[in-house]
Image (cartoon, rainbow, N blue to C red):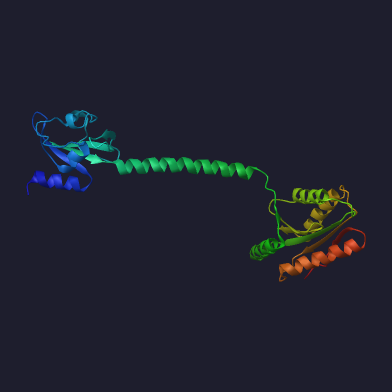
Length: 274
């Protein structure tokens, strides 16, 4: 195998092509890969490289070897397929390298980079917006409470429960209880969880909150609900014990709430567990 054939074979195997130029810079021989990238069929002997690839930069301007930083140009062959090519010279040999895959990857990276920037901007905008809790079912609230207690015991911070009961006149319509729901949602932080037992019974889970902080929340809720057309508002507050189950803490807060309701309303703290 001659040196020229060896060069042709090596170039073609790497997604490129090679031709040998004569003294007048016309093509003496070309590899199959070169003809494929040029989109040329037949014998190229005597043709100039520009006749096969009009977009090819001037031969005198080509680097002696192709590199990752070499400029690319787009060429559409006779088959109608557009390719991103790089050209270089090596003595009497003109080399074309197909960089289409690299160009697609670069465009994909650029597109993904823009998408990531857009997502970061959207996330930052969402983080700037105040988060409001949504009303959960009691089954979902129980799961969230268990998760909050596990985190609290791992990182040693308190969790408190606030139970809320309201009573209204028998003639009260559903809109009043809808207002109660909206008032409760607006009274707590985005990290808190609000659950609804029924239209008159609610439970709040307050992470990172000792019983004193939960009492402040309870008083705030009591003041806001007191502005509505309700007959009685009762609130019970309990802090989850170090080894207490979440359901037991909810029951203690509920018991305090029931006692407050029986006394005509108000706020009552459950006995702290030691």
